[in-house]
Amino acid sequence: MIHLTRSLVRRWLESLLHIHDSPRRTAAAYAVGVFFSFSPVLGLHTILALVVAFAFKLNRVAVILGVYTNLPWFMAPYYTLTTVGAAGVMGVELPPQFGARLRDVLALSPVGGAFWSALGNLLAPLLWPFTFGSLAGAVALAAVAFLVARPAVEAGRRHLHLRGHPPHHPPEAR
Image (cartoon, rainbow, N blue to C red):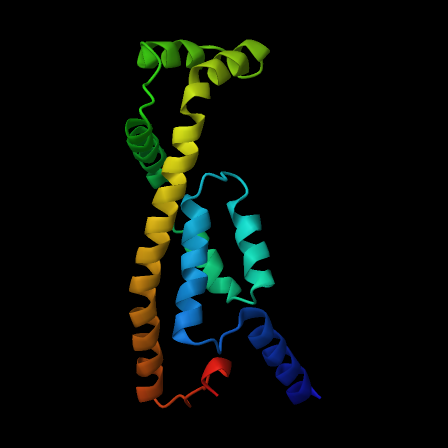
């Protein structure tokens, strides 16, 4: 009975995680996660990435690893650089005395409506540069992630094969 239970759990986990995917599909799953991680959909990246993973039957672990590639200390520099870069390409200028006005807004209490109104007025001209800049950056980083992850997954699989683990044949290779 225990053997049957372990077998069922193992099949369920393999089905859930798609651990027998090809290196190409595993790298693509990681790249999807990286895309959402650096996309402009702050706060929804995990949910949206998992929806895509389930819809396309991608490796959920690889997607989640990709989503959490964007660490908190990368976020501010990344979104600042992509927004400023896109603003330059789009010809959008920062509002006059942006730094001083931002300090004034941050001095207000976020509980009151004055804070949110002032913040919205200050950042409104940067909405499209933020969106397009972070979207372009997300696409570029996802492409790099795929190109780096695929050989890494293939090397990992070769290493497992050399250590005596039985080779697996992904569904698309059969």
